[in-house]
Image (cartoon, rainbow, N blue to C red):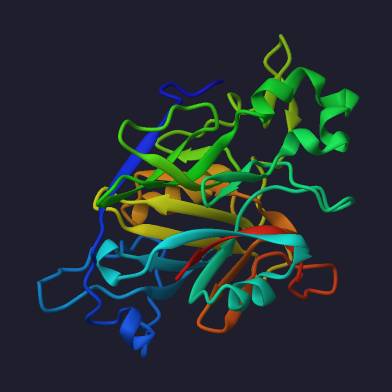
Length: 309
């Protein structure tokens, strides 16, 4: 059933961030220790005027997945941005090209023609438009879902004068007063505060209440990618990778990903393209999410990334 309260979530960030601590000027000299345990919450860093919070990378061992997490506190001096490949490109190649210290795969695309199926805005201009993808717009099986597909949720970056805002909301949602849209990338559905798979055309039932469409295999374990926001403005990149040590299908369902993000203190989250696309880059190392039949991680070229610089 559709989730109540489908709409916009905004996180307000202050600009003019300090560059002390493990920040831009130090290029993240040291990673945090690996933190294992599915129910453990990453504590929000205590920040003083003399010490800036660090951008950190952690791995969580869950029964059916290893979840790779990059956490970007607002005091770190880094900002989240959007980049798009001219065609398709690996995250491990695209991230260094834009000078990223961390990146995660982002929007949906058609692997057959390399065209986007998500809206992408950079520098205030719409540079990738799913309405120009005829394989999407003229697909007879999708005609009844097109309105929902073209209004799926997106991660937005606003310029609000002396402030920066991040938001997760449907594509048609208005821009906040006194702000301009700097960048955005569509994906979906929202995972928190509620999963909006029905509202965004990913899930559909017949009159008997039986699921007749599940575009993401959302009820089954798979590799997943997501971006989340905490109330204090912290941004979280996460991918749920499949496990090498199990024969059964591994990874997380959409609900499982949402529940995991809650344990980190995330209150708003957006599902990103998953499966073979799931990729997370941190300090020169790329982690992939999907295993193939030979039990090797799939390195799949993608269309867009969310990155930290």
